[in-house]
Image 1 (tube, rainbow, N blue to C red):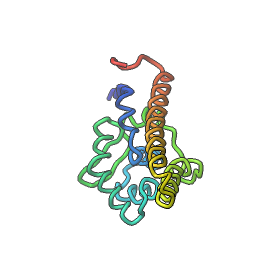
Image 2: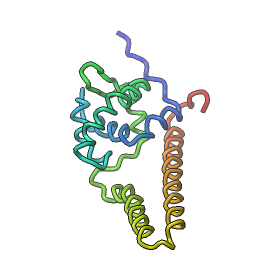
Image 3: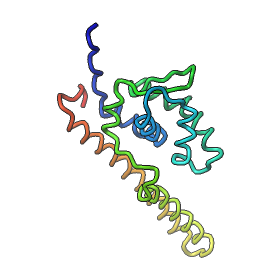
Image 4: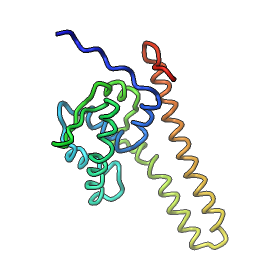
Length: 178
């Protein structure tokens, strides 16, 4: 039997879309550490504390979003193989390419945790200050909105740049349209 051809490389847009969601990124990190088929229920339970705020509601919410949206999207791209009937997942043909384009942060990485929690802490502090001191209400709210918009733009652009650099470092030509 002849060996199967390697999968066609995913486009930058596909990689960006696949990696744009924190639950998909956490799932890929989890799958990378595992071997063979992995229960989506177990994976949801293990990644929920890192992808949601409320632990009790989070596990079920993460599980539902994984089985209804995220695993199917990753499977459509060939990044994972998803057994919808048994709710289990394993690495797909494009898994290695995708993981190579993703910088993982350990859940114990306090720097990464602070990076994502700091805007929430600053927002809560700003809103509290705006409630207590009437003269800062409008400037504080405008500042909070501006900071959050800046964070979203920087995070999206950082991911886009990382994917583009990762694709540029791969051997061979880029897929058409890139």
